[in-house]
Image (cartoon, rainbow, N blue to C red; front, side):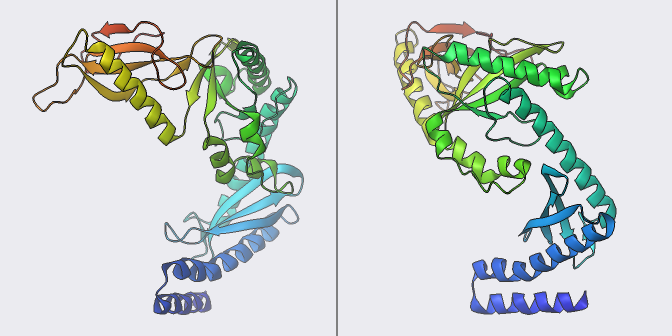
Length: 343
């Protein structure tokens, strides 16, 4: 290990001398990552011979040290095992490596089994799972939501969720949950997604940050389904999820329009930037309803703080209010927490 330290020190000195932070991260991490990857494979060969094959590694510099090494599992094409190892210190996540590797393999197999449960449930009702977040996060599926199709599609996806809940078992966290969610992206967005390599384990390929970023950089929908004693309300509800810039633009348009309407009753009204969830109106994808908070009068600084008044507004996709505003007073409880009525 002493030789390893000397090589890393020489690499670090070289990087600093050339004055490049990029070179520092690259060259100084390269030696460590290569050695960490080799040490991880040696560890796997010793404790689980023939079961694991390294397929990638990334440096954890500067956050910790060492590398995260990924393995494919010989008898499970879906599973990926991730091990954080520091060959220089001879530790994995700061602990003895054999035990950490055993836990990582068990976790990888468990995640793969959970993936197959959700994959099979959605495949059975015609919706391919194209991405996953962390374990327990909503899956991503593909569908075109229009006024003509939204109720039908949400109901079909709700049927998939019921299959998923049932297959997960009555004692599973999903079956005991109060609700589940599914992210729905358009075919156009899905077609341009970062697919990765087909040779990668499914869980590795479908949970990558690049894939999720390629799906969420455009507007998509999040469908929610209530669960009661393992039974899913398959009708579902959906909300719009916009990229940050578009969300800000939509919110600003709604706020300005609502403020202008409220001024007829409250000449000095101040509308806050706060926005409640914008939920699609039943059977519509071009009508969304949500709350804005406002103060009839500004405080001494001209601001609206801890508003106790809200307005429920339905808007089109551009943020233009449609129909009448619904004003709701006394929306905070005795602790100051918001208690907005359901809609």
